[in-house]
Image 1 (tube, rainbow, N blue to C red):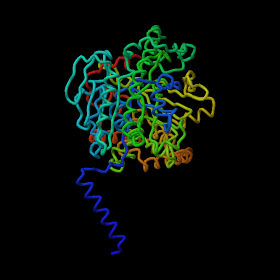
Image 2 (tube, one colour):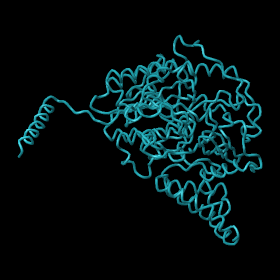
Image 3 (cartoon, one colour):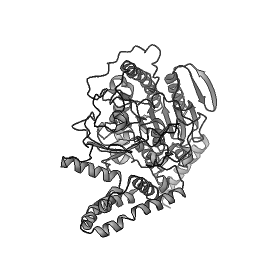
Image 4 (cartoon, one colour):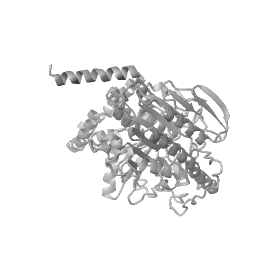
Length: 568
């Protein structure tokens, strides 16, 4: 053996002996993850003015701020379930605040990273249907029960299995300190995943001690969508919504939300200081997002749940120098809450362990930030505003699906008027471009509507050839398609092919009415067969199907108090 080779072998053996006897363990090269999820915080271009700690700590330097970030279902429990799974709500089954995530059998990001050897923790709010008791996938657990608190100064808190009742320490300070403890004690030789999910600035949005009078500017009531005077072009449910008379309460809540964020910002700064002091900043992926936005009387609305920009548009930032350092600090691509989990999976090296039936609908931000993969040009938004009702009313009413691009929003509301908005010319969404008769005179906008409708419902491509299926058929066939053919790479390729073939097939059948009618006759039996298959393969609750008097299939839990979820 060459003496240089022998020397190298002896050196390696010596290092192994020294390391073994000293008890040293080589550090795991995988990154840490700190995911911060605020509560009911809408997007604001001026966030740096009242959250300088978050802005300068995460964004400057080496961070990326997404100006077109959205929550795919703008409500606490569905959105957080999408964050934990990377899935749309119609797939994970949590379509309202009273729907549990567990029965669907889906593995969450916490469970998967725990199994992969990560040290895991959650501090704050988990899900609205959760009891607050510890979850087995988290090594460190500090949580409130359910989805909110009556007071930031009087609440219950479960700390690693022990309940503390009537806690009076200001909740944002308390939760921030608990998150800081996790970071201070996280093993140096084991990567960690921490979800820091504070209550702020959810109602009642109590400011921290001494900060109840912090000056913030009044709402800009000159904006034309503020308490919108003319909603005659909107769906019937909004036309039936009177103009608000509680504007002083709206103004007070708006200012208190901003004041509540000041304390949260301080705690974020403290967390980043811990990471810096421990030398972990550059090996920690930090993501900041809100679970949904909030109406401050725009379009006559308060709360969230609805499809308009104030409700779905949220702050979203990411910092991980190996990935973000060479990227522009502001990004205008369409990103969403469903992109968080696939990003974690890829960076943690577990993406190939996710079975096909649980592949996320979202996309890993790795491909966007390093330029290695093409990005989406549209995003689906969906919501079931009446799904949590406990009376005999129709839980399907007012439910919607939308296709959102960087410029256009096309919305279909169950048994109501469709909407199309051009955000470049009408960012306030004041003018619905689809008239009551559904016929758009402008050929450009008519084509946009048709294209987005096809992307929202691939069955409409079938309808172009054979005559449009009915709404229940579309819902059932779409559900069957999503269950049997998940939105993976193969299915996306299939949709691209089908979008090209559909118009050609329609042209071919245009002068063949008998053949067209014959094939169209298969649509209803096809929907019946698809529904029968779904009933016998109950992997998860079915999405809301138009025409079903009982609403979504699934077990409801008692309604959770969530002060602003029902204020529409």
